Length: 102
Image (cartoon, rainbow, N blue to C red; front, side):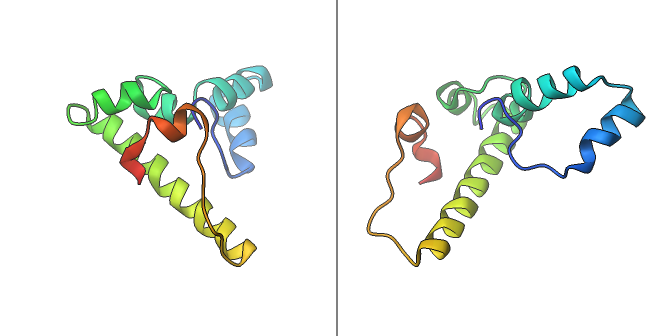
C-alpha cells in the first residue's frame, strides 16, 4: 500500500491508545495516510520516486524490499486459493512503474 498499513495485529490500536496516548482519529490517520510505503520509506508512496533513491537510502531499499516480499506473499496465497492461474496482470501505476519486484 502506498499510504495504508495493510495487515496489522489488531492489538496495535489499543496499544497506541494506552501507551502512546493517541486518539482514535490520530490512529486512523496514521494507519490510513502515513503508513505503507510512505511510512516505511519516510520519503514517498510513489514507487517511481522510491526507485530513484533506491541505491542511496537504506530506508527506501527496505521499504521496497518489504513491498516486494508482501507482493510475492499475496500472489502466492491467491495462486494457492485459485489452484493456479494462466496469467497475472498488475494494473495502474504500481504495475507499470515497479519492475523491481518482478
